[in-house]
Length: 123
Image 1 (tube, rainbow, N blue to C red):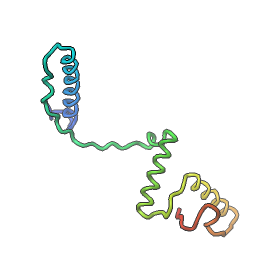
Image 2: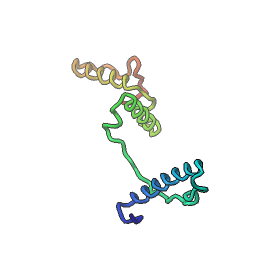
Image 3: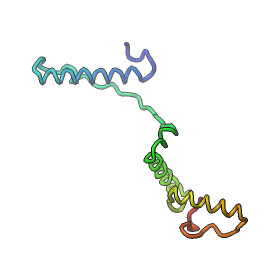
Image 4: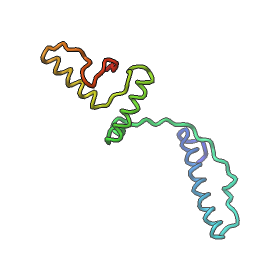
C-alpha cells in the first residue's frame, strides 16, 4: 500500500504500527544474535495526524465510576464558568428536585434555601 492512497491518516498510522512491529522483531533477533543490528532503528516515525474521539453517552455512563467522573468534570466546568457558586453532589440535586416537586404539589411558597441547600447554590 502506498502512503496517502487510502483514507486520510489510516495509512500513516498503519505504517508506524508495522514499523514498530518489525523493529520489535529485529530487536529480539539482535538479542538472540541472529542479526547484528536492528535496521529499523534509524527509521523515523511518520507524524500521525491528530484525531478527536468523543465518548458516547452509553460509554460514559455505563458504569457508576463513569457517571461520577462525568459529574465531577461538569462541576469543575460549571464552577470555572461561574454558573454555580459551589459544587454539589448528585444526591443534593435529587433532594432539591424532590423538595421542589413537593412544593409544587402542595402549593407551598417556602424559600429555596433550607437545610443543606444554601442560597449561594444556584440550580
